[in-house]
Image (cartoon, rainbow, N blue to C red; front, top):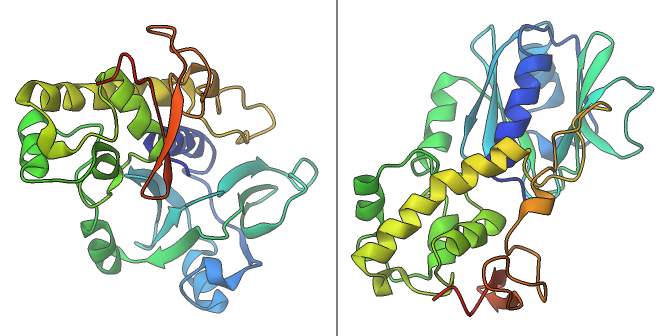
Length: 267
């Protein structure tokens, strides 16, 4: 599932490609991917200029000139492609936004969605999200963690606590904080809690700078997206050597999620 670094990478691409451009057509091939009738979606977004693409946690917001916005959550397996009909991936496209000759394809939206909102209807949706994980300060983090007894990984990935962290970067953050993700929040000392907080922003920023771990390019000329795949320290590296101590990375399952860590240099 795309996390903050992947969505930040998409945000960069979209700012270059669709901001300032007019949506000339809308095609919906899976009505479950949207939240209003197709005719209503078309009436709201067709012939509208995209004024901004902003990010909130793992979600992107396409702001339109008429005050409407499209809220995108790719969820598990969702991705985007910008191009023409000639170079479009041979995959089912659930939603397509046309910008004259170029099109923005939304692919793999089996669980993901792109919902139409106005300023008022978007507020309660976004209000459910915790503060941005990449910019939360130490005092805010300490307050959110207070009295929590959950394991570190579920705590980090709970979007009501912090927005933007998912399975991959929760493990990476714990690696940099030198702690096992299966520890419980209430078992952490003040020093360990501080180390966990201090690992969040640099880990997410480094991943965003590298292009995230998405395997699908955004355009035919995209050489950035997916650059983080070769730079992950523990996630999906079961049996491979830890870059810090050389011992094998192990995988365990907790709360139906895989957890990757080094049991020697993480405590």
